[in-house]
Image (tube, rainbow, N blue to C red):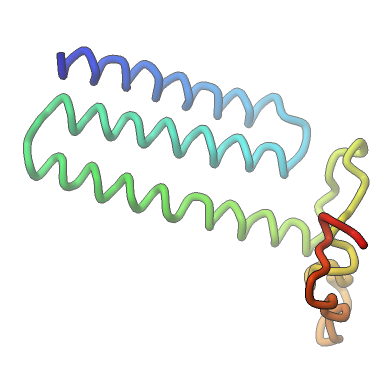
Length: 134
């Protein structure tokens, strides 16, 4: 039974990694690509590490697999956020269909990248959100 669970986890994890690679090739802009690569690859790698731990059933292997999974699950979203924020700050264009910029007046990176040293836009009033105006 554990071998069957490991085999299913390998198949599903490989499918998620395949979806992530297809997303990198097929999605139209940087922001969508980074979303696909982070979400699908993190889940795919986590499933492969779970399959490794279940399949080998050795305490050092299980410990290393769990530590690697925790590290990947903690750092991949943070890295993707940093890349997306840097892309937004340097004005990497999104898809033309997504031309609405809800963070234009709220996000400090919305200031022009060539105006280094100037103050960021005003901090919004407490209780306001760029996602729920008014």
